[in-house]
Amino acid sequence: MTATLTSREFNQDTSRAKREAASGPVFVTDRGRTTHVLLTVEAYERLAGPKQSILDMLAMPEMADIDIEFDDFRNRGPERAVDFDFET
Image (cartoon, rainbow, N blue to C red):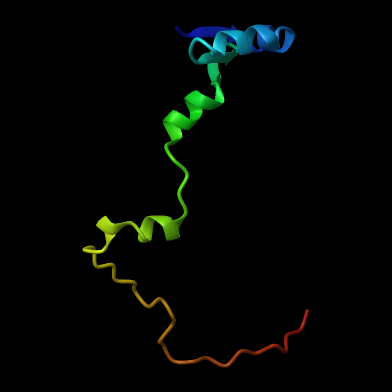
């Protein structure tokens, strides 16, 4: 179940908003336009998925068969002299 509260209602009764969020997302409107969504932490974590570092993801066994090539982005062009003398 979803609920919709105006910004004023949300500010005046945050306890209600938190109770409503236990049943589903609470949409908060500002001048008739939805601007925010209040979720429980559990609902957010389900949406966001598990937290993993890049090291954990690269260490996954299914990643062993994937060949990743990284481009060398260093500038290989001719060097230019830099003039630090300037007049203001």
